[in-house]
Image (tube, rainbow, N blue to C red; front, side, top):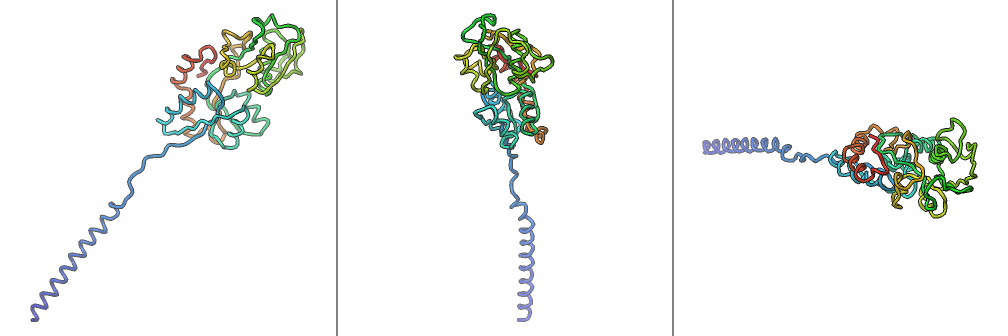
Length: 281
C-alpha cells in the first residue's frame, strides 16, 4: 500500500513538471505569435493651390509621378488670384503654382507673409491683344489700354507699353512703374486697371489688353500669332512653384520641385504650349 502511494505521488510530480515545461514553451512563443505585422508606409499628403491651365495641367501630370515618390498631392483650384497666396500663408495648403516672383514679393510686402520661390517652371510670353486693330500703329488717339490692377502686373504692362513706344516712363522705375510714372503720352491713351481674371472679358470693350497666355489662350489667341506687342526676352516674370519659408525644404516640397521641373513637364510644354510658354529649367 505504501509503495503504491509512493509511486502515485512520483507520477503526479512528473505530470506536473511536464505540464510546467509545456506552459513555459507556450509563454515563450506568445510574443512572436501576437506581434503585429509590418504596415506599408503611408504616403505624405500635400495640398497645392492653383488657378487655370496650363498650371493645373502641369500639376495633373506631376500628381501620378509624385505617387511613385510616396507623396499624395491634392490640387486645390481656387477662383481668384489672391486666394492661393492667402491659403498658403494661412497653412491651408502647402504650396501654390500660379504666379511670378514679383507678384509673390508684392503679396509678402503687403501681408507680412513669408512665401518663397521654390522652383521656376516656365516663362509665359506677355502680350498686348486687340479685337479692333491689326497693328500697334493703328491704335487711335485716346485709345483705352487695359492691364491687371495688382502692382506687379501694372508695372509689367507699363514697361511693355514703353518698350513698344506707346508711352515714356520715368527713368529707373522698372517693374515698379505706376501710371504716375508716365512722363509722355503723345496719343493721350487712357489706362484701365482691372482684376487679373477680368482681362479676357475686356477684349470686347477695350482697344488693347495686356495679359499672359494663360488668359489669352482660352480665347484662341497666342502671343506669336495674335499679339500686337510682346514683352522682351529679359522678363522677370517666370511662373514659379511657391511655398513657405517654414516648409520649402521639406522632403515632399522638394520632390514636387524636382517633378515639376522634370522631363515630362518639359515635353508637355514643348508639345502643347510652345507658342506661349517656354520651359525655365
